Image (cartoon, rainbow, N blue to C red):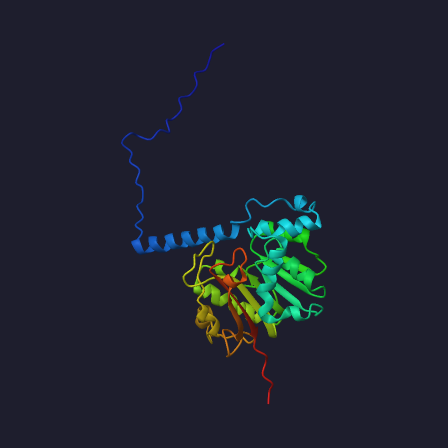
Length: 294
């Protein structure tokens, strides 16, 4: 039998003399600077969002805690370390005393907590005010999962959301609490956007309390931005974004305070003599009531 010789294959090799041209992209120094700033801001944002959430226990673990263990340890999961249960209760109540809420604990109201974390602050509010209901938002899904484990879901709705775009209708809440979350924003304009949203979702006459704001000369701690006290006496009613759009939506306030939020109390938290309060200040404000049409 005759064996057939295989046909020679054509070589697909590239000649040694072949050269490859690599395109060179020139990036200006100003563009590099912009890219660098964006990367740093994203790093800061993600870092501040996750700084307490990376080592959270599972909801299954926390679900096994007793009532007393929740009192003792829940706030520690949000890095509110160093408090006894009594001190943490005092810490929460100091933050809302500017609105005199504690004068009537049987009142019925709906509140929003911005940056609810694992739910320690809201848990105490719901215990002190048995007729209150609310909503809590946070950027961190793991924290929301824990809050859903420890808070009564028939009284509070929890979801992952951003304070710059609150998923709620205008005039939805009687009170809004932001205990330690506002200073994690990255720019002055973001603060204005947040305050604009706070005003939008508050009912006329509704109350706002914001805390853990770094004072002028204090250490920034884990905060990203220092919010000057003068902002609360501002009569700003428009953010930079809104100016560009040439719009000023109704329900965002008029005069008498920033976005119609009239300052009613400002306090140096040092006087509380509690952990985490040194070098910080807190405020409470009320949204102006709608003027009656003549």
